[in-house]
Amino acid sequence: MLTTHRPDSVAAPPGVYVGRLPEAMHRAPVDVAEALRGLPGLVVLESARPGRNGRWSYVSADPLAVIDRPSDGDDPFADARALVARLVPGSVPGGPPFAGGLVGYLSYDLARRFERLPSLAADDQPLPELRLALHDWVIAWNRRSGDAWLVGRAVDGDRHRLRRRLDDVRERLAPRGTPANGAPAGTATSGIDELSFTSGLDRDAWTDRVEAVRDAIARGEIYQANLARRLAAPFSDDPWPLYRRLRTGDPALFAAWLDLGPDVVAGTPRAIVSASPEPFLSLEPGGRVTADPVKGTRPRGRTREEDRLLAADLLASGKDRAENVMIVDVLRNDLGRVCVPGSVRVPRLLRLERTAAVQHLVTTVSGQLAAGRDAFDLLRAAFPGGSITGAPKIRAMQILERLELVRRGPYTGAIGWLGADGAMATAIAIRTFVADGRRLTLHVGGGITWRSDPGEEWAETVAKARGPLGAIGAEEREEREERDEHA
Image 1: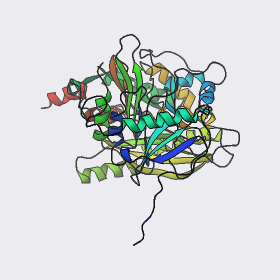
Image 2: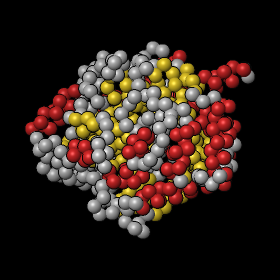
Image 3: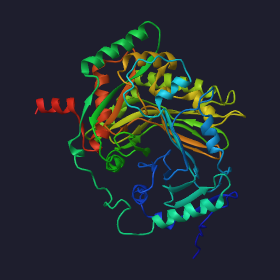
Image 4: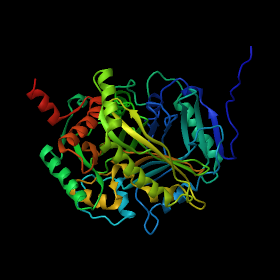
């Protein structure tokens, strides 16, 4: 009988290590992360719902350096470029796409470094506009094959330090009976089930703002805008159990945990906890760019037949299809600023994708990055994503700043990684909780067009919130009160 030999390592440039990790082979990324929680800066980028864009999951911790502000001067990414350049370069064919580099988030408000925008909304969540950490090692899982890998890149050419750090990772993953934090996997903190979120905008205020967007459309200022509202609940506990619940209760292609370290004053833990269904920008080492904007939403049905009817309604909706196509035009324009002329294409238009709570229309836009351009140029050209701003993008963002009460912060920014080989993968930070040490916040929103009905748009945001809130055992206060009234 013939057997296929799978090597324990693959060929890699000097200073780059790629080897199989049996200790993690049959363990979920979230459980491996438990063993690393004693280290600072834990990150989990996980395909909790594997699919076409969800092949790989990653865990890392203990970064060697952290950038928590954009650079001064003309290039806000100057420090990030210099940081990733400290890693040994080169790609690893046959290995994980990400083998060390920068991991973190870009806040929506970083856009102020790229465009002239007003500052009207309250800035009441003091988090960095940009936070990128340099990770020289990563544990990677191939969700299709089940293989687990330990990969690493020497920083500043120091291979001996990399070897010591990889040995430390293996030691931490050695069986000990309980995770490193001493708590059984999946343990929840007290009080999570009692979380009740309050919206910063009530239904009447939301209606007024939807009408304001429609008025701006009638005046010819914009074609659409993605209006959002923020839900918040007091919270200063460990948010890690929230991530464990979210990734299973509302599985997503791009689940993410980013440890932001303690609040400098209160010492309470801070983190980003995300279950995003929407990729933002991906870049392959050869320069191929892909974006998959999501626009057009319906809830999931309570029965299979109802689910099919809702999907058919979405696919036939002229309003939703037009909304998606408008955003595709925005992205084509953005990518065209840094891609080879004529290379920007739309290979897949208006396909249906589902999460546990909602179903969306998704389109794929692709292009070839021009010579002399890199991942940071791509981010600067397309950030923030058109699917969560509007069309035209800049005017829509100016109007939204006047209508939304608070800054978005990480919401509708980007979460992901940038590798030393020039590759990148990011997701739009939607379905994303932010634990800032005092509160737990969740933004929800939707695209407003001239055809929008304020009541339907409100119901869409309620449906979008229901998935992540329900996954962590929480709910929106107004929805609970309405349910109690009709009980």
